[in-house]
Amino acid sequence: MKQTSTTLPGLLAVAALLGCAAQTALAAQDTDTPRYRVFNLGTLAPRSTSSAADINDAGLITGTMANGTTHTREIFLGTGRNDLSLLGTLGGGLSVASALNGRGEVVGWSTNADGVRRPTLYSRGSFIDLAAGVAGYANGVANAVNASGQVTGQINGQTFIYAGGTTRAVAVGNTSEGLGINDRGVVVGGAVMAGDVVRRPFMIDGGKTTLLPSLGGTFGQALAVNNAGQVVGYSYTAGGELLPFLYSGGKMTALASSGFGEARDINDQGWIVGSRNLSAYLWHDGVGRDLNALVAPDQAGRWALLSAQGINDSGAIVGYGLFHGYLRGFVATPVPEPGSWALMLAGVGIVGVAVRRRRADAG
Image (tube, rainbow, N blue to C red; front, top):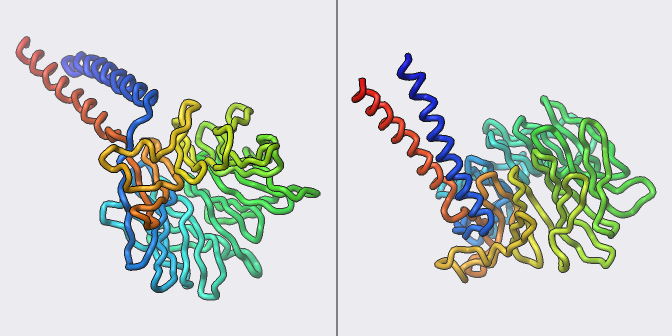
């Protein structure tokens, strides 16, 4: 026991040193935006297209496959390494993915047997119709899901929150739509308020609804919120340009000075993805980069990356673009991939063995 107790602090110290080294290396990588390798998610049928919507921290990807022969669309799920599977529908010919969580639960919408678009949650191998308890006609979409399975979206033009097996409406203005939700249950989206005709970004936190400021114009939406409460989306300026924004610490900041674009997602490190002027974009530390310019040199010219839709905490990005002129979903991973740092941290085990051997020799 004494040997174990004296060995553990040494191992922890070594782990701390290696951890600091890894953090230093990653910090350097943050300063110099990494290159990305882009993987083509392909299609599952001839004359088809694909688009990726989200990626979780385990590398699971969801998106939508559009079949050009049958004119159907279906949600897919997989890592993109030749393992994509179609999930089906609620009985109609269409299903579209919006997001997924760490448990691999997917949200989006699907048409039912009557052809009505219904907000859906795919969990444990089957679809759940989130509008099943709504009386009368119910048309809607689920847009985001958090770690505990809470979902937000809109039904019949009004925000809803699904939790604990129950869907409840949340009135925000005349019409509204929940577009993002974090693990604390904070919801963001866009709403048209009473007496108004334009859409404004909003946040619901602890039951309190707050309208977020704009970039000077009269239209905007909040699309995602991370666990630090940072919000991203898009807003018009007073000059009529549609720009991506970051709302953090009570301050609204434009992520571009001109053109048009949107910020689609933000991870817990504050890295943001979206699009600007018809190109997929990545922002971090206040700097925006065209993702096309960050593709590994040997892949240059193959892709025209149009929009980045999601990013996980390892910096892997998904979205859609043109691959040799064909619309395809993609996953882009940093070079070197985050797993390379795990190899360095594996040195802890090697050092631990050496420590035990030295102690055994000394004993």
